[in-house]
Amino acid sequence: MSYLPTILAALIAGAFAYLWFQERKKARKAEARIGKSLRQQKKRLRKEQDRLLNALSDAFFLIGPDGVILFANETTTELVAGRRVAGRNYREVFLDERLNRPIEDSLTSGRGVVHQVVLPQQASPRGIVEKRGETAWVVDVAPLNRNAKKTITRVVIRDITTEHLVEQVRKDFVANASHELRTPLSIINGYLENLVEGDIDNQAMLKRALTVMQKHGERIARIVEDMLVISRLESGEAAALNVSPFLFTECVEEVLDRLEPLIQQQKTKIRFKIEDESLALIGDRFYWTQVFFNLVENALKQNPRRPLTLEIGARFNGEDEVTLWVADNGVGIPGVDLPFIFRRFYRVEKHHSQDSIKGTGLGLSIVKRAVEAHGGTIDVTSVPGQRTAFSIHLPKEALATEEQLLLAAAGDGDGQALVADRENEEGEHA
Image 1 (tube, one colour):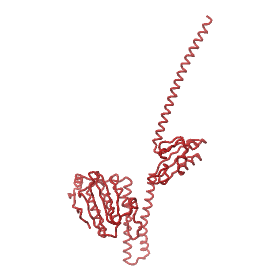
Image 2 (cartoon, one colour):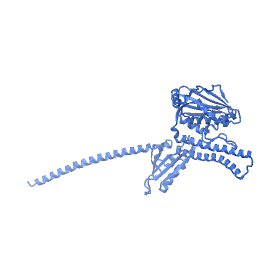
Image 3 (cartoon, helix red, strand yellow):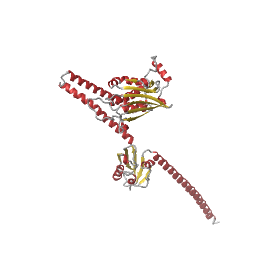
Image 4 (cartoon, rainbow, N blue to C red):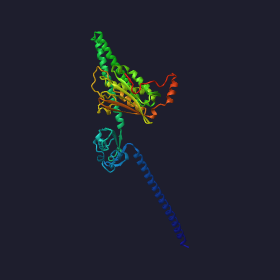
């Protein structure tokens, strides 16, 4: 009987030990499950992080204290034309010193560095020749822990080429516009000074001075008008076009009426080659008038010293496209100038006398942007001394139907016939 308490104590201790062991076993299993769950969650978070970083349009990578790249997203790999990035020193990856310098400055100083880099065509970070010319990049570098002596550094490289080009175009536009306005203003001021000082003492000289000032004043007004038009076209305001149907021939006749004095002065012949004189467009007539006015005026002003034949035509290319063109048999455009003639303020003839009033240099830019605003394209071909042709290609959506014309006429309430007689293919307008 004296052993009973001992046996009971042993049994109780064993029971407690067994329960503790079972609980400990459960706890270890729970810990294992939690650990596994945490590892899986960490893995999922890492995948999600990589997915988000790879979705960035910017190059993003991490650099260790020794300059070795620890992580790089897919954009970084694309940036260097698929070359291996992770595990290599950044200097081995980016071969241009202008890209490496901001990274080196940050690693050395331990501070954040943001620097804009402009690279010429042959110095792309991709290590290949860029078709688009010079490129621009923002390199943003910063240590993850600025207080630590050795820390990981993150680098973001962003392509800002489009913004850079837009800014360059803006600067060029302002500079060119200032130059174009300065010339006529200087001429006007010169004559005004002579008038104020009394240097013009006869009626003939006075009349000439006033005539020159008037012409240059008109030139300033034309430059400002063209700048406003091209500004509207480039700012997106042209997206809200004042669309209405109108006859192509009516638009052309309006242009020819406005240019009649210049046509008569140069004894220019106008020849029509219009496949269907009932051809009608649906679009903003103001901009289409600008298009043909600039094309016809450009042909006249580029050929002032020779009898000129100007051809205006239209033809259907199947059911899906129509081509409109303005052609002349003048001096033509040199081949080296053809790729640039739609640029703002670009002129084929660089030598202008002060006594002659030239175009604003914006006309063909307006033409191109107005055509594109209507869903079309424009191209030019030229054989110097033989033929120069500007051809506009429009989709069928830019053509108006007879029903649309009738509805527009009914809305005007003028009761006039919509299809006016025009000269036929062999007709000429002097």
